[in-house]
Image (tube, rainbow, N blue to C red; front, side, top):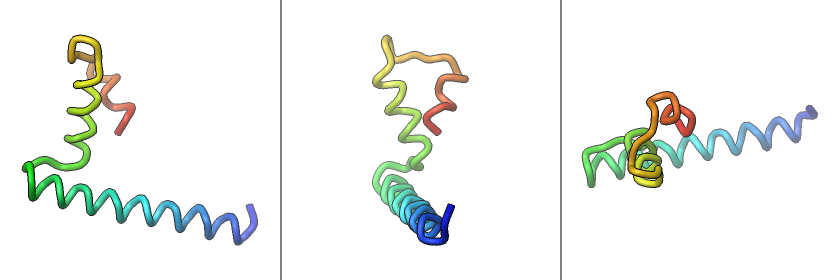
Length: 61
C-alpha cells in the first residue's frame, strides 16, 4: 500500500471514530444508551420475532 492510500484509509478510520463518538454522545444524552446499545437494539428490531442468538448480535458490533 502506498502512502497516499494509507493516508486515505487512516483518514476514513478517524472520520468513522469521530462520527461514532458523536453518535454515542447524542444517543447517551437523548436516550441514555450508547452507540453499541443502539446497534444491538436495531439488530434485534430487524430480526424475525425480535430474537437472535447472542453470537449473532456480536457481528454488527
